[in-house]
Every structure is written in structure tokens, then in C-alpha cells.
Length: 161
Image (cartoon, rainbow, N blue to C red; front, side, top):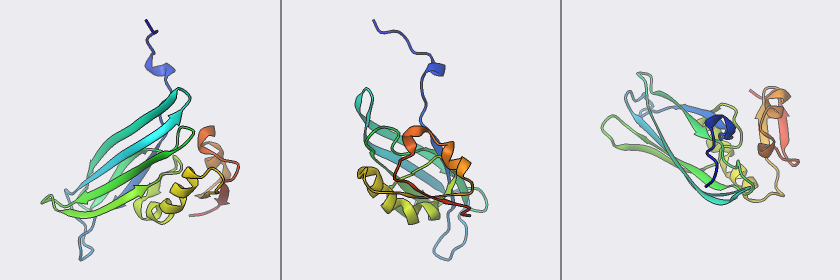
């Protein structure tokens, strides 16, 4: 019989705070809307390959703002996971859908910023020889990332807003 692991002995995945504002076609904020984030794929860890899935939900406030903690992709050796985010208004009609998002680091990020960098970061995660461009306010932010989230090929832009 295998020994029972205690929660403090397990390494928990790193999470990033992802936020945004849900707006309608007239760019008015949508109060009481719903954001659903779904992680799917597989990853290779020290103990073998695992299917990785998670679903996270958030409700928008009166100003359409939302925020959620999402697992950072690529905690294992070979990231093959991606996030899908869907936004629904108060009548449960789909407002937007964003597929194949890749969250590269545990730093807080706005959904609009994530969409702009996601395709390149996803490609870099699949191809270990590619480099990623990571914008940080201070190099200490990058250095604080878990070792398995940093790469020798990373290009770090320090002082980015």
C-alpha cells in the first residue's frame, strides 16, 4: 500500500490571476455575466504523462469586471495544454470565445494582453528551441517564477508596463 501524501507535501500548480472586462457590442459593460475558463490537454511530468483538465467560473461585477486564478500552462516537461475562455451575458448568450490561450507565467495578466501574446507563447511551449518574450516590471518577478517555468531561451523585457 502506498503512503498517503499530506497536502503540505504536494507541489501545487502555479496560478496566474487573469482578469478582464466583459462588454457588449456597444462596448457597455455586462453586469452579472459569466466567464468560463476550461483547461484541457496533456502534460509530461516526472511520474509520466497525465491528462490535464480544469474548469473555472467567474461572475462579472456591476462594471463588467471579472478575475480568476488559472493554472499556468507548462508545469511539466512538455506543455500540450491550452485554455478556452467563454463569456456569457446575463441572458446566457455567448458574447465571446477565445481558444488556445497559453499562460506563460504566474504574473497577473489582462485577457486582452494574454490574447496578443498567446499564439507565440503556445508555439514556444511546444517547441523547446523557440524563445518566449516575457514582459516584467522587475527582473525579480521573472526570477521568482518556479524553475520549470523559466527557460534558457527566454527573452525578458524589464520595465514593461
